[in-house]
Length: 182
Image (tube, rainbow, N blue to C red; front, side, top):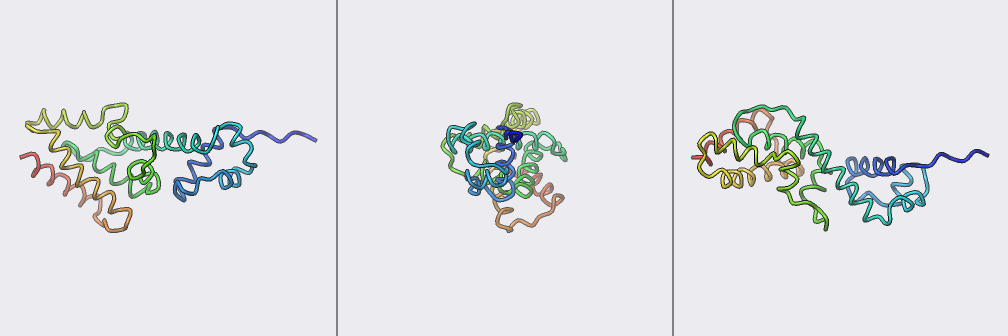
């Protein structure tokens, strides 16, 4: 009898990540991942010491997914912080479960919100420098004020309380920057 093909670490991680995107992070249990991947729990624990290690890998994959999402999100404005805000709000709308995992969870090994936003490319620092170059005397303060508005808007998408279109959101973000940067 031929031996069954072994499930790979990538297949396990992809399965757990897919479950997180579709059902939320709480759905990622050994039994559920095994059932979805079509294997027993044994292969999971052969490649991961425990579920905590798998959960950490899912979190890191989600962080990379957000970085890719942000880098590919269309740039709609030349106003500092607006493109970052548009991408963040859209990510919450389109990838609610990943947004919750990255930006609303209390995982012990999680990165700070700032580290996730800044990413490897220095996204936040780039926007702060753009604001400074355009004459904003307090760009870090403006970022913090805008971020409260942006994060609140993104969270409202999760509850269905945010119903502005992209055009309206773009307009509001520009207005908010104009008010805060004075």
